[in-house]
Image (tube, rainbow, N blue to C red; front, side, top):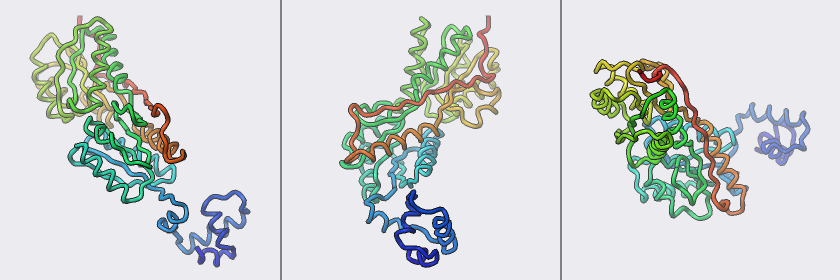
Length: 332
């Protein structure tokens, strides 16, 4: 910083004001300082700045199973939002999820002097691991559908499941079969609750759901069984990858989509509009989830001691139905 000040012909304090966006610096002076910064390739010493300000500008993130589209896109949305607000991320990705592993990850991040935590919490075990959260640092759960004691941001999974099912009922299908995600995932629970709610509200039969593991193979295996039942005319699949497998199984069995069976997925992955046929699905706005999650954490960081609101804030991002050609009116 002293080198920048010397080259720009200003004081050390003026350089500091420019770096911190102080309004009382003349435009000409600011331009000279910025030119000196670029010429010298100056970069802030984050460790020294943290000693002075007692702020590291680092947010700790606990992530899980980023091989799946939802958690991976949620992490990307958090990273983009944090960077836009001038924060960096320190990320721990869990290979196995237990309450102890979650606490261990947060202890590790505490050693990196993070200012607060964002925890991607799609499974019940993650939420249980947040029960003993570290004192003095705020925590925001993302996709923790059942984290009543924590500030939380999530997509309306129940509403998304309801939209998908209601769409099929409105097309004249007498009931809708469901291919659910893993039983221990909160998002899968929310989607099945929305499916069930729509059927019960319409007075329709509620068939026994099938459960997969989010992967196309499980959707295919379930689709093979569904194709054997000529009475099935509509299927809501809890994610697009399983829907891809279901579409393949139906096609191999000679069941036409949407003429014989209508299919709806969930997530709106980039490939879904190129399935055969293009998939009707429910879109999640992961960018908005990240923005709201980081925004909520920053709000908490501004409060003394990172205090949480009473009751803790809960921000829900609406789901959106995307209609393509895998759904059609029920056959007479």
